[in-house]
Length: 425
Ligand code: GAL
Image (cartoon, rainbow, N blue to C red; front, side, top):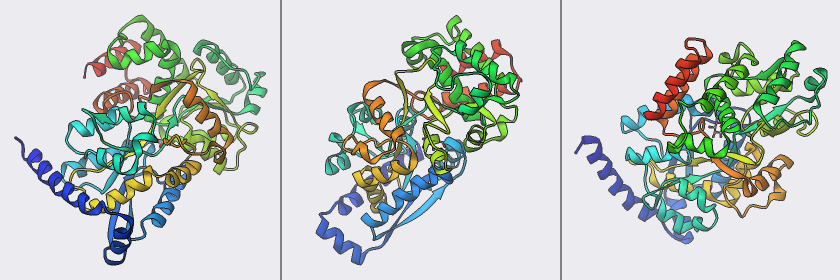
């Protein structure tokens, strides 16, 4: 038995007691508001733009619902949490957890469970009636051995492409045309290249991994893509090889300064008329609208070519770390995250859709209303870059392989070999 494990058990026991005390009826809550002040240190990677706007909106609801709990904002900048998760890993290994941290439904949450770093929240699901308001499939992504470990705040879609119609028109392309294969799309990108504009705006590391993910999804189809994560698709095979060739062409058709750009900067290339397309999750929708762009006219959007009818999902979700210093604060935060008011306010600002199924779609933007419908009707697959499809160690190895390939340290054969090794763990 390791020291870490012993400590985890002791803290977990203390927390169950503490949560029991905090779990009181509303009369008691009022009394505790008068007599007790606590805090909730919440760890996320939402520091700017639409991401910060989303967090601020959620905090505003939190402050209304829990005036006795002080919100302490622990954010670490760096798109998609690549920096934040490293800082968090250090804090968790030093037994210095925040009161709640952002993670992703699916493989990422499961990994924290395996490490004994987060608490079972099943009793809170029962207390707040959450089993009935989240889609059953989503709850199963947060469940390990019948226990539910996190509360989802939203659903995002990763396989979206954002389109500047003027740039396409200048290249003689119909901005509303859809492309059913990556190969057809590449032809359109090549036409843009001839005009001197950037065909495909791209950002740093994780956005390149996301492009790899959507290319594999487009080229292998749902079954082939899912097989990459359950072992039934051969990473070393000829189909993956052909898809990696497409990925290579897409990289060649992107901006050469991609490694220097965070996702909002890559998106700005598109918005400012310097690039034709940008593959980005639908947090881009809120970012564009906040920047004054009109979706549907200034900027068009569609599923990434070859992925129509598929919703490549990810869900930001919040956890209760083992040993959280202010468990009542954690509980208050989680209650707001799961509440209808919290989800409506947060998602309106963030561009995602509520994970809850009882929100009124008419409260949301046109883009979001379409996403709500697609999430119901489409085939759902899990995002690689955003923690749903593969364990963090595999994602890290894939990210390293992509970085080597994109900076031309490795060739295509070595890239594929590195991906085969990444999948083996
Ligand atoms: C994702 C996260 C989104 C958004 C995006 C870009 O991982 O789930 O909410 O923040 O990164 O940073």
